[in-house]
Image (cartoon, rainbow, N blue to C red; front, top):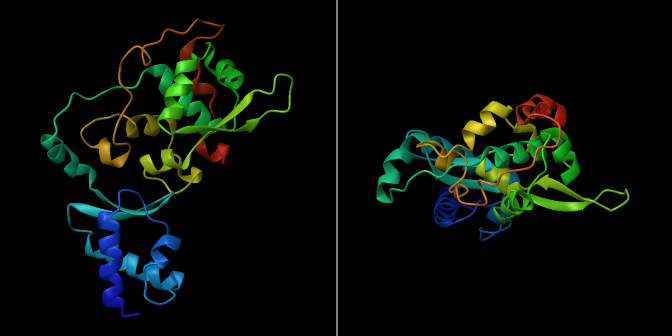
Length: 220
């Protein structure tokens, strides 16, 4: 297939898609069967062509997508100015534990954090499509096992779990500041009743939670 035409097709598809497009989806766009290497070569050309622009083409867990560069977000936000919404500490710690220790049960999370996990915390993360139930543990009661989703990786602009940042970096990536909205996630949890739930103490201090979570490399 004519490489110039293929580049135009891929560019148009990626610029108009609301979601990342996988390599298999992009290969369907040609008039003739396309090889993976052929499509990837054109994608790399587009990456280079947009390297000096206000948008960039990058690869995440679900595929390829265009996005505004992080440094452009503060200007784009002027079109729809809103007060930044914040995550509660409980939500961030729960998400971090699942990300670095997955798969985990609710009991595992409570043991690490030292506090009971409110059901609304898990429901909120599931509603954001950041965690999901992937099965049950073969013990009495059959507790559900939670793991992170591909959507979380996409929102963190990552390809795989092996690229998970340190706990400190993960927190900053999910912080809805002027540069994080495109780099991480388009929205954050509303600081309403669900995000401000008080959790009953169990034994440990909440501050000990992060110290007990292994690094991303250990989790991988």
